[in-house]
Length: 368
Length: 226
Image (cartoon, rainbow over all chains, first blue to last red; front, side):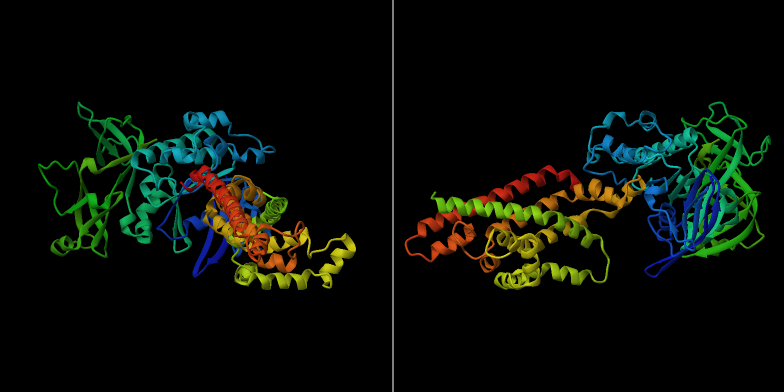
């Protein structure tokens, strides 16, 4: 997959947008605050918004070129779009929604078979119901199935998890991973929740104030502190790609991770839940919220805190009512402390400190 | 019921039904365009379409007479080329009905299209449908309750049409005498109060039946609002 947007710019009322990027990864997460221009970015790709200038190319197809006066209409771009709200057609049954695009796919090669999509998304039980009779998760699954059955070459998801509870989110994320694994179809996923994106991909595009600020591997972006710097620290999550060493104690409740493959030196520990299935040596993505990190000048001896990671203070940033301390522990860790705590402890750049993190505060995003 | 009544009732229903059928396609198209357009001239177009609603019906009828009468350019062309006359006949009845009921239908239908979230149309486009297919497969079915209401309003307005009709089509018994005109004529004759009351009851019954049918149609499409 290769999608390139060359100097694509447009104005909507007072807001100006400019996108310049070339993307090749199979799942791309788009992150940014509300109103930053994420949806506008997807709408330009799908042809639902016409840019004022620039060009958009997907593989060999030129979607838009201002100079050549080319603007392929949305129905000829072969892009499946799943919106934040499901937007299932209320006058049609689930089955009629699913086969809506059948009239327009006669000349296309069929990658997504109706029965296979039904079984992949578990849609068999409510084919003859109307959308209003379904739950939020079921509607979202139907919307995904409907987009798949339009035989797209690219799938766009605009905040597909925003109206779902935690259980439903987990369910939809697992369906998306299944779709990507089975069909290798490229996907763009917008979310303002970094944790949701990280469960799906490592590749992030960060959009702020109508422009693409950075794009690349999430670990590189997180370590550079750009997500925090751009989207605000409150949106930031520490991410670690680490390797499971072993399950140390008898009841297998504590997992130890190293920051390098084949290393036995513990970098961080996480509490295992009943559902955690990670074997020794497996690469694993972990996340820790900045507010779950305590900064101390000395380690807490004889305490229950499993992670006491020594590092050097790189930066101290005060944003509104909170103070964010970026600590280089081999891997960068950002901690959120109160301004009062900073005033009393007076941390400075290059100070040696300990990042204290409870094993329960370390979330296992996924093992891969 | 005497023969004159039956003729008037039957003529009224025919005129109302035919004018509603003629009004509907144009009203649906214009209602949709007005709902989706952001053109600067939209208020002017809306004012022009709504004019017969605010103008006195007699004035509308008079303007139609000037525009479509035998001595007008349109009247002459229609008469010479197609042998059609727009005055004092069945065509005049239907024309007057269309003109006065059209704005009501357009307003109701436009509101119905405005209530259809544009995102449904965007979804349809991304699923491969053209804009025309999207209109027929998504926008129109979703606006159906409003379209039905618009039809009923247009039909009811045609049933009761008086001013423009009497000006353009006259009041010729057995030819252009609709129920409203017959009620008016009977009211002018002393001793015909009973006949007037019966005609009013017939007229109200037809209107009531149309509204009941519209409500039934609305109930059947309630899921569209969920």
